[in-house]
Length: 101
Image (tube, rainbow, N blue to C red; front, side):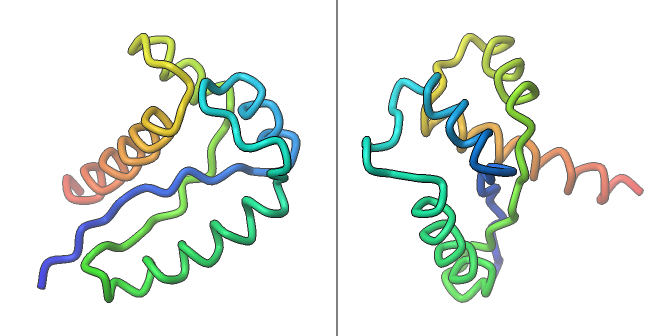
C-alpha cells in the first residue's frame, strides 16, 4: 500500500495561534484556545503518523510571516484551505529536495 504524506499546519505557540486566528476568515470558535487546538491536533497527528490510514501526516511548524507572505503571493484568503495548502506545499518541497539528492 502506498502511503500519502500530507502536511499538518502546526502553530509554534499560543501567540502565533491567536495572531493567525484573528486574521483568519474562518477563525476558531470563540471558546477555542491554543490549548484546545493543541490537544486535538496532537491526537490527529498521532493517528495519521502511524500510516495505518494510508495517509502519513508531517508536522509543519509555521512561521506566521512566511505563511502570510505565501498567501499574499497567491492572493489566497487566510483560512483552512490555505493553511492546508501551505503545509502540503512545504511537505512537497521538502520531499522533492530529498529525492533530488
